[in-house]
Each structure stands twice: as structure tokens, then as C-alpha cells.
Image (cartoon, rainbow, N blue to C red; front, side, top):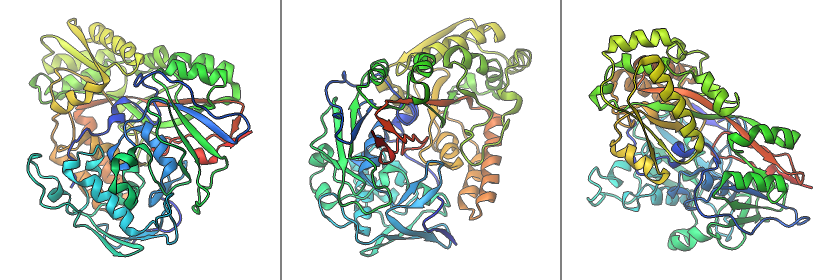
Length: 544
């Protein structure tokens, strides 16, 4: 039996705008999006604090995959399962999450808890929220996170112009006021971790009746409630919810999330004391921040990895030896020192070190800078003819910097002279990759939706899900075995075997794991920023 009782924490996913921040960055990457920040902020002495981040896209939980929206939603909502700072699951709104076969799950919702408008939080609150997010015609950004649940296909026909056969998930049954019975398409041992993802938050009846009003003033069940409406491109003010009875009782009176279009401006405001917390200081400012902030500089481990993907559907990139040669021609540590001050971690695996299943040096020589071996593999592959186009978005200046170094390495070490950059607007970048219109290697990254090897391997490499056009029955079969296995250690063995297949074929090159580098002001203490969707644990922050 699998159980979560107060401690520790198929597979085709349709891509409806999948994972916006997987491409744009980690939990709270400061991208150059939105309008200029203005106004807002907490007043000294009122017990609240201010944190800076880019503008969210949506505040309906099922309609966003944005880290910036998660900053807010993680404060407004308690999901069934929560995550500790080190990535262990614990029951939050759930009393228990159990299964005898990994396929049929029984969820007991804690009784007596209420939304900020006084509505009771029941099993139906979760079922209603999930059905709303999973219904295909709504075209919600997090729609595909519900694909493991029975009945998803009937709500999402392959022909998106066709009318769905159902408007609710047949695998989600409300047994009574506090009990949900969830049936999946196949056994899936990572389901409790999936429940930590913000899209699985409950929805009040009032919110479902008027989603437009809810977007401007979300009604949650978490430790904070909205103070006024979402002030677009300016700020979102939250105050501690006095009726909260869960375990995340705020140690402060509220938090204001102030929107910034410029990472440099946000950092300047942090230094000037105009904001109290900023989660991602620009790489170029990190040496200065370390010196000026002292113990207020907040380094942390992260689970975000940058990759270089290949359009394997293009026959010019079909030979694995070419892909291996390019991997071994890239000096990861050199780029780390030149662009990221030596703070990033050169990749030695497809998984970051914070994820269970990471094996040091799993990638071996294929992720090691070796120009001589790279030339040998390149020659054996038959080489590359024509223009090599390198694709990346304009979300961060560092992308252009390291792509320049990669291009120089390929010229010097492989003799590929005709290389062109294709810098694409961030708003168009993932639409391009989803349509497979790129003509060369492209920058991709992934951060943890939840702390699981499955979350990386299935979403990035599975034949029915990846952007590369790479197919492998061996890889798919091993991931499927891992998902169905009840024993966590046996599951990790299968995930690692699948990882070995992807490393051997190298349809996508792992480059480096990000380093988290934030900062705080003198006004606040006890600031914890996690590498997961929870991001800043605002409820723990103390205000002086």
C-alpha cells in the first residue's frame, strides 16, 4: 500500500502551451517581460513585506504554468499535498492519500476548512477545479497535467475542433463530502507528488460561476487572501487570512508581489530597500551582490537544467555520433566561469543533483569536454553540411553569451564554420518549438514541477511528448515500468535505465544546473526559497 499520512511526499501529454517557464526559467527567473514596475510595496512597521518578480500571466490555478503566478498561488491555496523545503511530500489539505495498486487512489480531505469567502473546502471543491482545468475547450495552460486521470481523453479529443464526449473526468468521483476516489489510466506511483502542482488546487463555487472576476481577485483556501484586486503590471497585495487553520500559519501580516520588467531594476530596488526579497539576481550582478549584501545574499540549490536540443526529425541530425560530437565539443566549465561566475554546475546527468535518481557522472565522457574525441565522432558521423542554426529566446542576455561560446567551440573543435544565430522573441519561442519549425539545435530547459525523476524524463524525452522528434520504444517502456512500480527504489532503477538510453542516443544535450542567487533586505529574516513550484515560503518570513 502506498500512503501519505502527514509525512514525506501512459503517458501521452498534449502540448497546450506546455510549461511556459520550463523554457523561460526557474521558480522566479527575472525575465524581461511586462511593463515597468511602479508604486506599491509594504509600509515600514505594518508587519508586511514586499517581494519582486515578473508579472504573472494568469491567477486561475489550472490556467497557468508560470513560476511568477505560482509565487502568488502558492500563498493563496493549500493543495492536497504540500512540499517541505527539501522536497518531501506531506498531507496539506488532505488527511490521507492512499492506494493499494497505484491506479485507484482514495483521498480524504481534511474537514472543517474554508475558502476565504467562507465556503467550505470539500472533496467536490477539488473535483470541480480539476474538471474545469481538464476540459479541452477551455484551453487551459495546465490542461495536460490531468492526462493521467481516466476520462481525460474524452474531454480532449485529438481533433481540437471536435466536441468533447464528456465535460468531467470519469476517473474523479466524489464519494462523500470529504472523500475523493481517483482512478488513473495506468498505475502511476508519482501521483501524490503530482498533487503538489498548483493546477490541482481546489476551486470555490463562487469562482467557477465568474472566472473573470476570480482572475482579478482569486478566492483561495491558503494562508493568505487577496487585498483588493490584481493591479496589472504593478502589484498583487496579499494579507494573512485570519480564518486559516492549516499548518502554514504566516509569521507576518502580508506580502506584496511587485511586478518588474527588468531584472536589473528589481536588483537596484532590492539594494535600495524598496523591496525586501528578490529570488533571482542577474548573473552579471552576482559578484557585486555577494560583496554588498553579505549575509543577506541568498544562495540555494536548484533543479533547473539547461539543455541543447536537436531537431532529430531533420535527417541532418539523425546520426547519434554527430550529436555526441557536439556534446563533447562544448566546454561546460569554461562557459560556467565566463558567463555564470563559476556558480553553475556543469551537467553530469540528465537529472539535477537535488532529484532522487541523480547519479554522479551518469553522462560520463559524453558530457566531458574532449575536442580530440569530438573530432573523431564528428568524422565518423559524416559531418554536417550547410548552415548550422542555433536557436534561443531573448528572455535573458546570458543565453546569447553562452551561445556565442558554443558557436566558437564548434568552429574551433569541429570545423563547422557556417553558424547563424536565431534569437526568437520569448513570446514566440515555444510556439515555434511545438510546431517543429526550427532548423537547428535549440536552447531548452526544465525545472521541477515536483521532485521526481519521472517529471524530467517523461516530459522531456518520452516519444509522444518530446520536442525533438526522437522515438525510442526502449526508453518509453522503461519509463512505463518505473511509473507502474510500487517500490520506490525499483522505480528509480527503471528511471535510471531509461536515462541511460537517452544519454546513449543524446537527442538532447545536458549543459548545466542553475544556481539560485537571491537576496533580502534588513527588514526581513527567515527567508527560505525552494527549488520547486512553491518558490519563496512567504509564510515563514519574519518582519523586523
